[in-house]
Length: 199
Image 1 (cartoon, rainbow, N blue to C red):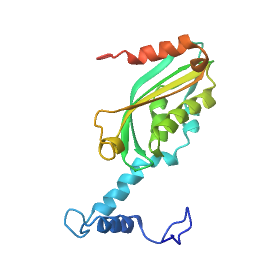
Image 2: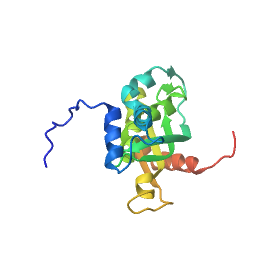
Image 3: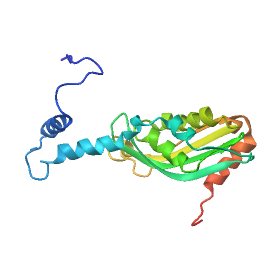
Image 4: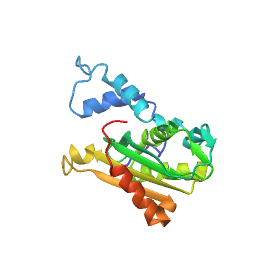
């Protein structure tokens, strides 16, 4: 039966009512003690998990730009990342490694994890997330080049479907000199493979 609701329109139901209906459709009793407050909790959780839609990633970076005479590679690696797969709305999580070579400007280091949060706290696919992070840095500070690598595990592969518990996905986006110069790209990939116990 074809839906009468137009795309991108909302019904009159509240978020909590929609979750309550989902609980019923799953065969559960929404009035059971453990589930009575679940619709409200789910709403709050989802608002938190997709709060990145409220952020302007490039504006976030522009708040912390500094003029420097430095043209060597800057790397921030092992940044924890959590997101929701847009295909099944199940979590995927892992680590992001970011590098860039400045061209007169650097970003405050704390802004790189914040940039990752802005893009990852949305319904995502890993490939797009990787590209968005790299392009935002490239567009905002116009460095000589940017490299981004994400290593992540996806619950949509681990809990359902093929159920492969130890698989991970690795994606990369290389712009500017990271794409054009093999030596720069190799240096970046070599440095992120190095594991340190403490700083």
